[in-house]
Image 1: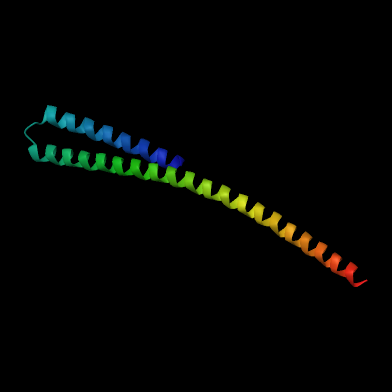
Image 2: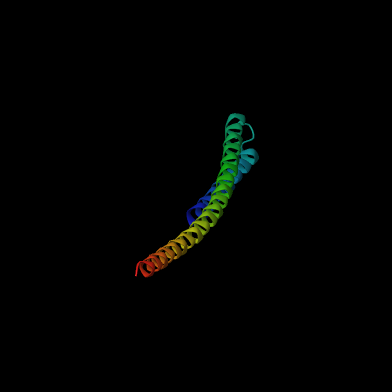
Length: 104
C-alpha cells in the first residue's frame, strides 16, 4: 500500500514540475507553439495516468476489504466444521457404546 502512496506522490511531483515548465514556456517563449502543445499533451497524459492510478488504488482497497471478509467467513466455517466433526465423532462413540451395552 505504501508503494501506491509513494507512486501517487511521485506522480504529483512530476505533474507539478511539468505544469511549471509549461507555464515557463508560455511566459518566456510563447512563439514555440509546437513545444507548448507537446507539453500540454504530456500533462494530459499525466493527468490520465493519475486518474487510472487512483481508480486502481480504489479497486485494490475494495478487493482487500472483500478478501478480508472472505477470509473471516472462511475461518468461521473452518471452526464450525471442526465443531461438527467433533460432535459427529462423539455421537458415533456414544452410539457404539449403546450398541455394546445392548450386546451384553
